[in-house]
Length: 205
Length: 219
Image 1 (cartoon, chains in turn blue, orange):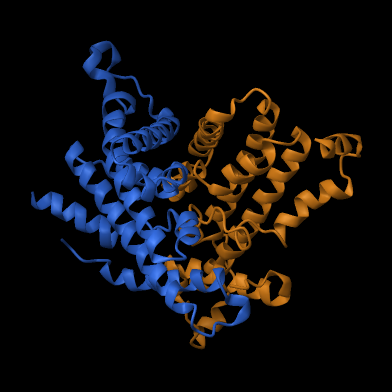
Image 2 (cartoon, rainbow over the protein chains, first blue to last red):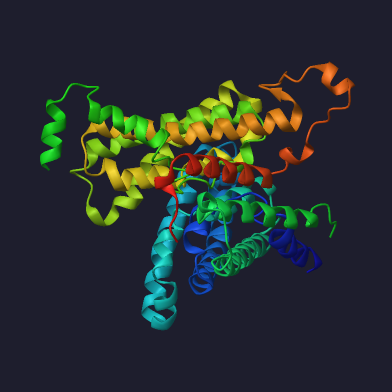
């Protein structure tokens, strides 16, 4: 249990996907003009990361990794399909996003209306694929740990995008140098937020 | 489309085709103007060498992906085009990844997951959606190479700035003479930290927009 909380907190603050690794920057910069839309995108990312990371974990460990196919019999113990991971992960993500979109549309039209437009965007959000690839690199012990990692990363993305959206809403009233307006200042603010988040680095949990 | 017919009669490097390459490097740069593809790059620009390797990989993947999608554009059903595009990109990235692992293992370790993240690099998808799906193979190829070069240019500049100020070297060759260290110069360790990549890009945007007033964001 302690281990799970540890992974969760680590992935939110110390290994924040946006502010420590700069993943998902495209949607992060494009959608962060108002707090309201950024909350929508943030929830969609938490949702999709929480689903795709454990699924990719199972695929990695029971289909693709070295020796992962040994449950089929001793003949398959040496098979290593890990060169297929990229294509499998992205296919899982794209199809899960499609599936999730259809399920939400069917069962919760209100949720669909608030998340709907963001879901297709998420298939090509680097944070999602990045989450799965980091999961692969860090060798989590079981699917539950991987799930917590996915959820934590999603919450980290949520915090970062809502934070910058709030700052950008305020900054509209400030007198920014004309060449820096819009994109330039957004980059620099993100850099400063990244520096602030670096103070979490080195914390042992 | 009528423009297609015009392009096919033109010489290979006509004015219009040259623009396809030069525009994205400057005025229409994918990173500083179109805001695409910032995702996977910033963490690898601590040094020049990995930046250069990633830049070359992106140019290769993007040029080829644009050609393949452009050749297939009449056979791809509209509804599943995103999956088809992702599959094409992912297969090309797998090839790049295997080549890097085989011939440049240390750089491949350093890039870690960022080679894989070329797949979700928004510029590639953006150009496939926006250009290759509607244009012939040769202009699509040029468009891909042009946009990837614009991306590569920023990547290399950021990598060079960060390595120069952060470690005093370029491509692991010491540039700042020992004499300077002797009189008290110190490397700015700040530039090695990831957030400085963003601030460096911010400054590049600042310089570019103050030189070209048209690009200033009105909002």
